[in-house]
Length: 134
Image 1 (cartoon, rainbow, N blue to C red):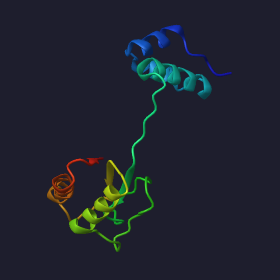
Image 2 (image 1 turned 180 degrees about the vertical axis):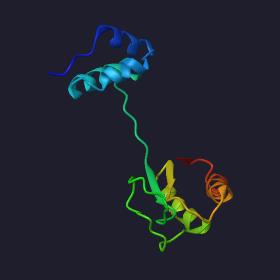
Image 3 (image 1 turned 90 degrees about the vertical axis):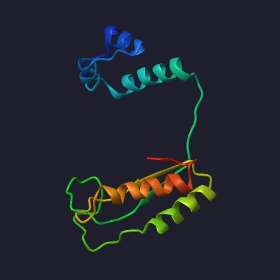
Image 4 (image 1 turned 135 degrees about the horizontal axis):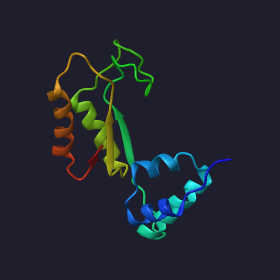
């Protein structure tokens, strides 16, 4: 039988003072009890207002030297790397479709430096300052 959420943890959560110990206890409770607490916190924070964003994930590459298991790139060294112009084309398409955010993501590349990644973000922000980048 899973433990229940204690009154102390609920009070801490409502006050915005959840501790690491509280979080570890919350991992042990039944998911529906956790959902109920989360819904209560959401309601007390923002009421019944629900919002959403339209975003697009842009994979600038499918090459990766990592082995984290997060994606399906799996040491793919023969894949693609999009140019800045290709990335901007995808952002432009997303913008036309009403996106307010783009998630720019890709694998770990052994042959590029930090400037490569900065160029991507700076180019997107220069041309589309109203689009959030993630």
